[in-house]
Length: 94
Image (cartoon, rainbow, N blue to C red; front, side, top):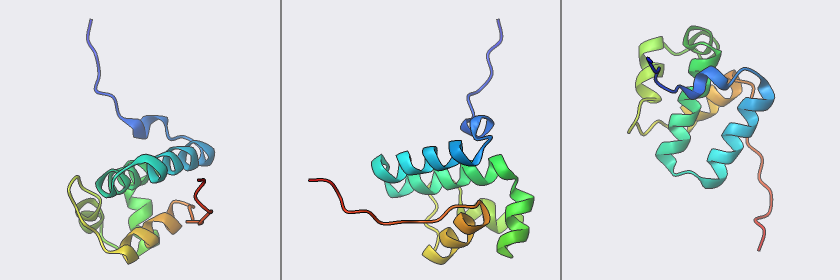
């Protein structure tokens, strides 16, 4: 039996799934995990589309969202907007 490599991007097929995934990573993940999650979301939507909407080249986008990358906050915000996301702040529960 042949197995395939798990790719979360294959399961991010609706705006609700994308939001749920990103919210979970924002709540529980490290900085690098958040960047990686945004990369998975961009891949699920399509890097070419995200590149067009952000005004970035595809290679720059891949580099900014690669494992271990430390992108500028402005890059993260551009990509979030392009994937249809937004950041909101809620009071942390005690």
